[in-house]
Length: 194
Image 1 (cartoon, helix red, strand yellow):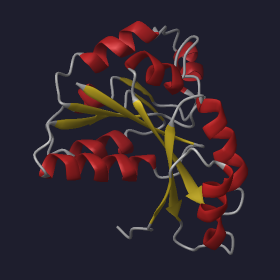
Image 2 (image 1 turned 60 degrees about the vertical axis):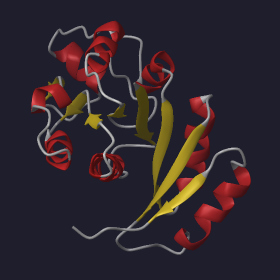
Image 3 (image 1 turned 90 degrees about the vertical axis):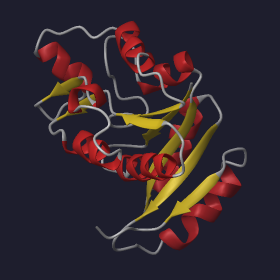
Image 4 (image 1 turned 90 degrees about the horizontal axis):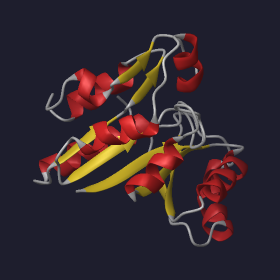
């Protein structure tokens, strides 16, 4: 069993699109893969999308065991509801899925607090997971991406998601990030119209 975590620089940067397409592709090529999004806040649309991309192989609650209606960081929402979600419980739920490859999509950015004292980065380290970081290919991404890559303190890959309406910086961001984050592979992902 191997693990890949998909996180990013922020919320709404394209993590779910990439996670869904990746699990869809892997399953179609015969790899026993599933995608989980343990934490959702505000909406379960991301978890529903992941469920559809893996042919409803898992229930919504299996994909997303920790859901909060309020659009808040999961730790903030959990405290509001007087819930304590320990890291070992999250890891246990992830490991309970006996699959060849488990893709875990984070909530928000890399250091968004999920529970008391842990972020998606702690899940990466505990699982020995590969890390894919997602960022929007737009003005400001260079700083955000470099901060996130450095905060990861582990080998990661960076995927820049093209925007529906690209700004002038989009032509240069990938090349400059390849130069400045030399040990981090940087990929340019096209904008997909759904």
